[in-house]
Image (cartoon, rainbow over all chains, first blue to last red; front, side, top):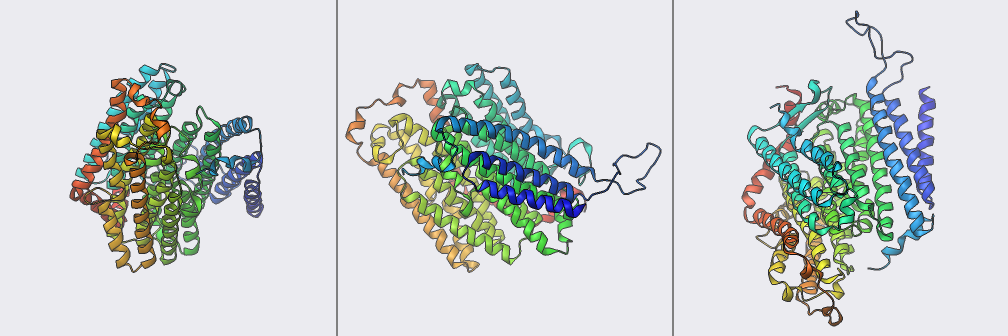
Length: 117
Length: 502
C-alpha cells in the first residue's frame, strides 16, 4: 500500500511540474492543483499508514493498548485542503479576469510590460 | 514567562478587520476605524517589545495544551523586533492610505485586507509552531493576492499572474518540507523539532529537507534564481500597497529563513556555501537590474532584490557579528524601503509620472519635502551617520574575516551600484531642470486639501525620522541586534523557554 501511494505521489508531482512548465494558463492552474494534491498525500503517507485503528479510546480504558492511526497528519491535510481550495478559487477568478482583459490563454503574451524599461 | 498578551496585537488587527466589514462601502468611517485600530495595535506592539526586552522570552500555549503538543506562540527578541517594525510600517502606511487611495478601492475592502495582511504578518513572526507558520503565510499571501489584483488594470493582472503562481508554488514546497519534517521527527513545535532533528541519523535527508525550506522561503523573499516575480509585479499596484509589500512581505521570508536555519537546521559547510553563492548572485543580479531602469518604482523593485542579498550573505557567513549585521540591516531596510515606495506615490502625485526622464525640478518646487525625502534616500545608501552605514560596515568586516573575498567584492559592488542609482535618482528627479512640456501640466499635489496633505506627508516624515533615529542612535539599535544575534546563536535559550526544561 505504501509503495502504491509513493508512486502516486511521484506521478502527481511529475505531472504537476510538467503542467506548470506549459504555456497555457489553464494547464498552469491544473499543475498547481496536482502539486497540492501530491503534497497532501505525501503528508498522509508520512504519518504512517495503520488500517482500521481510529485514535479514539473508550472512556473506561486508561491507556492506548493498540497501535492507532496518527490524527495529526489528517488534521494537517484538512487544513491544507481548505487553504488550497480558497487559493484555487481565487486563482480561477484571476485567470478568467486575465483571459478577459488580454484575450489570450498564452502566458507568453503577458510579457509586454517587461519590454519597456 | 507565560502571558496572554502575545496575542493582543494579532487580535487587535483581527477585530479591526471584522469591525470594518460592518462598514462596507462607507469610506470615511472605514478610514477612521482603520487609523484607530492601527494606533491601538501600535501601542500593543510597543508594549510587547518592551515586555520582551524586560522579561526575556514570552510564551503562550494556546488552549492550555502543553508545549510540544499544542500550538505555541513565542516572543523572543527577534520576533519582537519584527513585530515592532511591522507596527511602525503598518501605522505609517495605514495613515498614508487614507489619503493616497481613491475611494473606490477603499469601498471594495482595501482596509479590511490591509488589517488581515498585518494580522498574518504578526502571527507569522510570533508563532512557535511550524504548521501554524504555514497557515499565517497563507493568510498573508491570500490577502496580498487580493490587494495586488483589486481593481486591476491589464498591467496589474500580468504582474499578478506571476506573483500568484510563484507564491502558490512556494507554499506547496513549504508544505512538502513540513510533511517530510513531520515524517522524520513526529513533531511540529519548532523548539521540539530543534531537539529531535539533532538526533536524526540520516543527515542527508535532514539537509534535503532544509534546502526544501530554503527554496520555499527563497521564492517568498526573492533570492537569486527565484526573484523574477518581484520586479514584474511590485511596480504595478498603488504606492501604499507597494510600500507594504516591499517593506514587509519579502522580509517575512527572510525571517522564516533565519529562524529555520538558526533554530532547527544548523547548516553544514555545504549549505553555508549555497547561501554564500546565492547571496553573491542576488547582490550582483539585483544591482545590475537597477542600472538600466527609468521608472523609479522598477528601480526600487530591483533594489529590494539586491538588498535581500545582504541578508542572505549574513546568514551565509554565520557568525554572531554577521547576524548582528543582518538584524540591523533588517531594521533599517524595512523602514527605508516602505518609505521610499510611499515617496514614489508622492512623486507621481506631483508630476503624474515616475519616469525619470520626464521628471525633474522637484527640489525647486518643494524644498522642504525634498529634504525629508533626501533623508530616506541617503539612508538607503548608507552615507554615515545614516542608518544603512552601520550594518554594511559589519558585513564588510565579517566577510573579510571569514575570508569570503568574492562575497566581499559582491557586497562592495552592490553598495556602489546602490550609491550610483540613488544619486542618479536624486539628480534626475530633484535637481535636474524640469523638462519643458511638463512644467505646464497640472500639479495634482497642490490641489490636495490640507488634511490630506498632512496624511500624505506625515507618514513619510515619521519614517524618515525613524531612519534618522536608527542612524544616530546606532548604539541602542546595536544592543538590540546584539541581543537578538546572541539568542539566535544559542538556540538552547529558545528551546528551554518553550519546553520549560532547565
